[in-house]
Image (cartoon, rainbow, N blue to C red; front, side, top):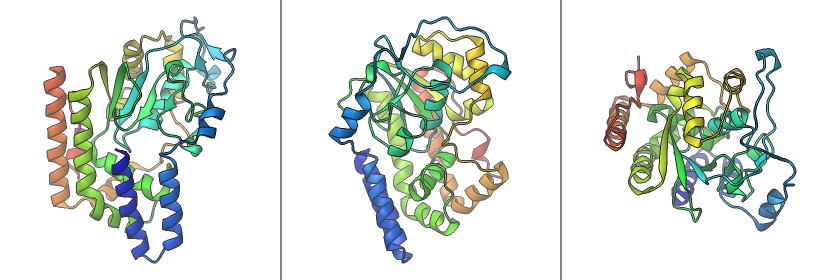
Length: 309
């Protein structure tokens, strides 16, 4: 996946160069690649966390009214936890799920990468290597040296996933790029990105031997409390109804890109012509087939988005 990210970054760089924006492109590419690397100093500094400032996963929580809900400061678990991968294709909502988990449990999340922006804005253990004391560890594949004991596979429909990923590569976590840049990236990176989206799901289902939970981004939008309860059960973390309700109330994280639904649909139609929509539908059905076969259940990955109005 690292090679994939580097290749797509190079693709985006080429597009921007063609648009006579060399300086911006070079800075963007260097920043994107830096997020995939971790220096020894960053590891050392991020790991310097006092054990006294930790949270007991079995602590009893008091019920609170919605008016008393407050954002939680994420801390490490006092006790070792099973090392849990939070695996997804880029643009599937991994960062949002990390925010929800930290709000729900009070336990910090980690990452196999090191994004300075995330580290400074709500994810204090982004660059740490104390994975056994975090609730989950962000990764975009399971080919790392980290020995994951269980995994949460975050899946989002490929229509919005690729749109979010192209936005991320061009404008960071929350920015909105110019439409002409977005269209250009979609033209050059669409096929490869869609193939990698399908491959990530297939590889995770076929190769990971530990316990696996599928969390659908689109289901979170429809029933966040229910999905949070099911996720907490899988993670074996006790949570109260006030934990769940406060998480739903404070679900907006720092890095969710805000866009009106009408604008989103307009943008999807703009970057996906009829042929791309056909390929997206095929990929959606392929992923649904993999999930249905693996879990003997019925998954709806595409939802209504498969019929763009």
